[in-house]
Length: 118
Length: 111
Image 1 (tube, rainbow over the protein chains, first blue to last red):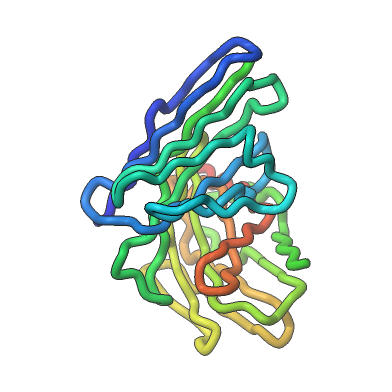
Image 2 (image 1 turned 90 degrees about the vertical axis):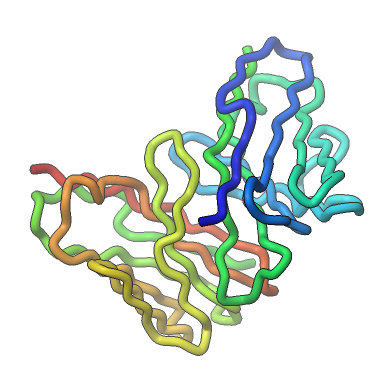
């Protein structure tokens, strides 16, 4: 089956630093990847849609200058949390859609990255 | 704005029981609906995807139904097992790609 990996799985950083999270599709190509955020005991909220070779599309209320997304290849998207603050502490999950995706197919989700900002 | 609600928020049952998890959504103009499982601190595993033209899907002990007109979906788990313990999320799919997730049901099945 299709596998999506995320790195790192867990990161702890000081307030004010930047953190980069990688999302990779391991055995398929993904023109579109999605980034979600999940606060404790809450559901997943879509942050942005990442398109290979073009700018990401951000959801309302998500600061594009704070959450930088780069999708430079068909297998890799990165999310950089710039100048992280404690309120950015959350579980970040990516998903990827196969280039041959159809409406009956699922997106494939990564295992998530736990970010803790001290 | 589409809102997706799941009831109950938490459920604890003995092994062997048949379960029904509920998902309701406010805007019936959806493309598909999907049920996921999330284990603590982990990503999501897709369980069932129901297209808007379908009324139900089955996979093993799982059966999901969809009633678009009433804005409801149910996930039926037969003969529950401790390994079924997880959080179950439903998500409605709009515009072929955006998933809007529900609030989740935390299920615990004890031996």
